[in-house]
Length: 248
Image 1 (cartoon, rainbow, N blue to C red):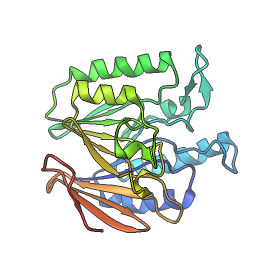
Image 2 (spheres, rainbow, N blue to C red):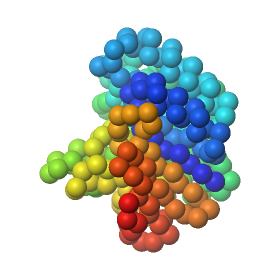
Image 3 (tube, rainbow, N blue to C red):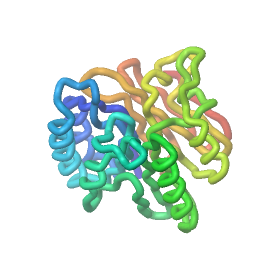
Image 4 (cartoon, rainbow, N blue to C red):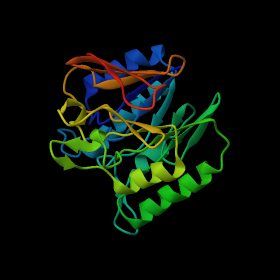
């Protein structure tokens, strides 16, 4: 089984076109937040219409999992917290969004929302409580903000990760967690696209400009992960205890 992971597309239409071409070659597509761009040239309503059309075409070719990011909110809840209501309305067959859980083989994927305050974080906790009770041998979490105290959230000497998500990973011990949000760690000397927190492999594909997004391909049969960017390819063996990167 091959899984393609991207994040932070920020309404890059060439990169969405690239995803559409790649969709037929993979089993699962994970988009870890920020499909939209609050600072983009197109207004938010237009972006939502266009992105939903892309999601429709993608789900026709493969199973798609999308979590909301901080750029994806289109409404505010009673606590004035940003919520991606449009993404909830986009839910269809083969398109899984915030709050969804899906079984594939012996594994399960859980999609977690962006939390912007106590209400949305409480909703995230409710989802995790429900999903923890599900039987699984391999558990995947998708959440836009990466855990803190990790090279996947580090840029230079600044750690911009989420302490709550790190605590969640150490407590629940999922097998894999996919995030985005912090664009530069894979391109930084002190950062990375992969790390291990406790027993959990964590990933951040980063963001780049150009015709294709920086992305991670995971092969569950060989237990290999490959990160591809404009700078080349790095590989990691997921069977070991630590992170072992092959030379790019």
